[in-house]
Length: 360
Image (cartoon, rainbow, N blue to C red; front, side):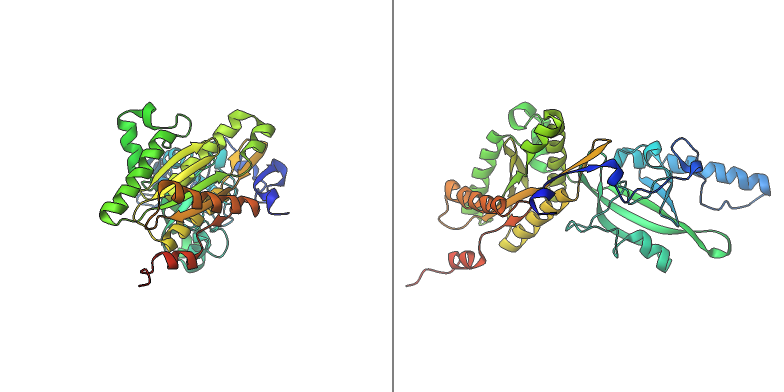
């Protein structure tokens, strides 16, 4: 498949190779069998009572809790997991955890289902593992989480499965949260709740002022949603709006709290990174690209995936707003011309020349 075809892929439900046939006893509506051995403190009746009590206790936890068997099938899913991921119990119990239920990725956007799978590592080593990941929300965006995976042991101390405990990490942008508290409709785009164009213009001037006064160098990432028009034509504007909202939430989850995200036009966003440098700007832009590319909007019969093209530019001495935006726009055009789903940055030799003292 060529690179262009990857930008807005439509995946028929029957082609999801990660799906597994769900055993009859584990199909939606069936009560999963708890995998944690009860502690027998008073004979068979006490053990049975403990086995019934434990799922009730896990249901009361605010964090998400999921139990997996040795075939990576989900056997228990609490209300905290429903709230965090958007997936209901009947959506996931009996399904393989790789089947878009978790679909973990690392901060750089790399899939964690291969050698980096925390579940496989815990089963192999028997040691608990903690980490920071992004999971795939049912609404199609990436959500940063803190995850703990630990082994579950049965008779003779053998591992019979794993328990996953996870919580959403804070990922709001301070500027947007501040706008929500005050003049919401003046500063925020009503669809995506990113900053609107007016607010973005203000943020650009504030970033330049901070550079002039305090030397805090900002970076700009101009982000275009690849082939959004194609999605609108094939599935309608309502689905296109869902894609835009999912992309926005994914981008926000990748940015730092003191960065800024604004919607400039229908399919284009500006991310303004405060007090950064060329390497970090490129790293974060690639993280945004990878996380969006690894997400999908589940329509039931199909999944819709889009990519983003990104052009970045670092503010340098003697820049104006126009010259700063102009470089980012040229880089964005180059990214789109090369097939999309890529990041183009200012050439390093150009940045090096800008930062050299003038010749005497």
